[in-house]
Image (cartoon, rainbow, N blue to C red):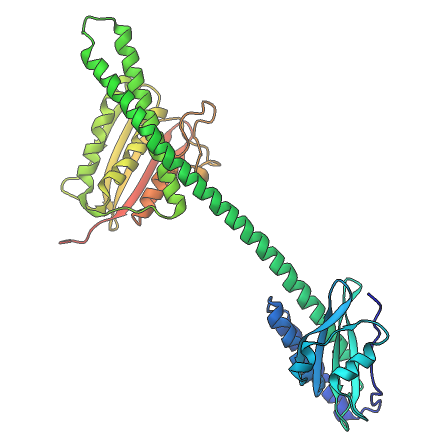
Length: 410
């Protein structure tokens, strides 16, 4: 583009004390206008605002903003005090003929004043901000400065708007890509659930049938293999269930169905399946339960899932000869469940992350999927409860969660 110099008429140079005070007031107004203009990020809002405030600031009868395209042809993008039919088809080059084109556009008569300043972005003239006064009115001595300041603000505001729109498009595209990835993941997990459950169920039933039909005096290695098959299938089914739970939790579609239950009774039921595994490792598994019932509103299966996860972890990480205690007690209007173990403990640096997805306490051996505690936290929070952990290295850990008690008579 060609360099555009400021086009201006003969501005009055004399300045009275009143005019000096008015100048200060207008400079203050300019500051306020600049703040207003840099706020909106939509060019369709910014550019008319620049023209409107420019005309008000310098008390012009008309004001137009022209922006040039890549070929250097400038068109009116915003105007005030100008016939819309005249601006609609107006086009000009930013060259030495610009003065004539602007006077034709603004219909300058004898004695009228015209002022135009370039809109410069990164050293390149991108357009022109022009103002027009009808005789006998004319510009003040500082109007060229004020109009130039408005042109600079127009360039900055336009650049901000373009940058924002580019950033918004990038963010929207990234969000759409992420949403598509989540949808693909959910579809994949649904397929895994459907396609794996059937063969896993078949394998599990076959293993159980094999265990029942093997003669007691038969080859003990066959019964051992059948037991291993059953345990492995159980683990795979739990993993599939965990993956599906995580998918629904992250998608925001997970929900629990709550109804009244006794927290003490839930705890008793959960302990039974773990008695044999604890005994096999000489772990002292105990329960400490209050007398009477502790009524809570919960999804029975989900609360037992949380308790089962905490008990299973405690037994897994407690060495032989250690102890695990399941406790339920009322505290401050809540039923507090806790599982204490005498395992190796968790370092203080890792405690804040233990409920994160894919976190594992035993990184060295890589046991588990790292989803259990994340799911436990999500399940407890879905009940409006809270979950936490305390631990001392070499002493053990206590995992606790609390659910609100139902009011008396509920």
